[in-house]
Length: 373
Image (cartoon, rainbow, N blue to C red; front, side, top):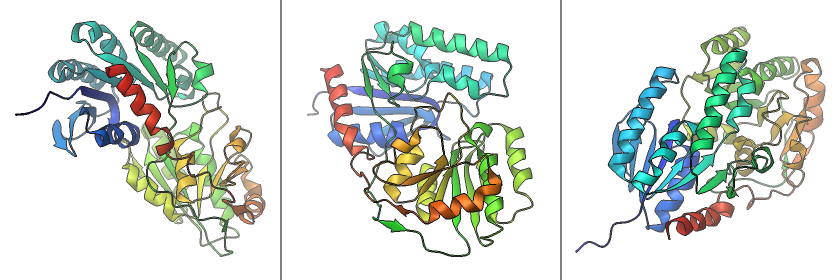
C-alpha cells in the first residue's frame, strides 16, 4: 500500500532552463535530498515534459523572448498549474506572478516569490528600448508585483532589502556556488608569454564586453600568446554583430555566443580552466550593491577575477584576495595595470563556507517546511 501523497512543489520560470543553476541546482536538488516533496519545474526546454532525477520538468512553451511567445507561456503556465495542483509555488519571475496571485485562493497553495532581479531598475540597462517602452514595462512590473498575495519572499541579493523594503517577510539567498570547493591557497601566477582570459554569462554592452575586448587587445602587445574566450548568451543580434566586428581581426579571441542561456557546466568548466576571469561591468546603478554569481564561482574554483573598480566589490574580496580591481575604461594602461595585479598573491584566505550554497541550504529548507506545515 502506498503512503500519503507528498506535498507538491512547483518552481516556475519562463526563459531560464529547467535545469537552471538556481531553480534546479540550488532549490530543486536541495528539496529532492529530503525525500519529502513531489518536485515540479517549469522552464525553457526542448521537451514538453520530462521525468528524470525524481523530478518532473515541464517546458514553458517559449522559444524566444518575443511578446507573442511570452503570452503563449502565460497560457501554458495557466494549464500546467491546474494540471499539477501544487501545494507550494516558488515563482522565479514577475511574469508569472500575476497569475500565481490570482489563482492562489482557488487552488489553495502557498506562494514564494524568488526575486532574482530588481526588474524595474534593470530597465535602465535596456538602451535598445525607448523611454516610453521602458515606462510601460515598469508599470507592468509594478502591477504584477503589487497584485500578488505573496506568503514569503526570497531575495537573490542583500541590497534588495533596502532597494525593495516592501518585499517582506524576506529571506536573502544569494547566488552562491554549488559543488566542491577547488580553490588552492595561496596562488601565485607564473610569468609566461600568454595568459588565458574569459568573459562569461550575459553579454551586453552594460556588462562591459567591448571594454574587456579592448583591454585584452592591448595586452597582446606584451603577451602575444594570450587568449580570450567569450562564452555566453546575447539577446540582441545587433550587439552580437558588434562583438564579432570587434573580434574579427584578432584570432586570439574565441567567440562562443548563443541567443539562449548556455549550459551552466560549460561556464564553470571554462572559469576553472582559465588564468583570469574578466568582469568589466560598466558603472550602472542596476549593478551597484549586487554580487554576480560568477564572483562566487570564481572564488570557489580558484580562478583570479579582474573586476571594474569603483563598484564596491573590493569588500567581497577583502578577506580572500581572490580578485583585483581594474580600470577597463583605460585600455592603453592595460599592460601596466595587468602587470601590477598579476604580481599579487591571490586566495590568501578563501572563505570557502560563505561562498557555497551549503551555508544557506538549511535556511531555505526550513522556510519550505514552515510554509507547508
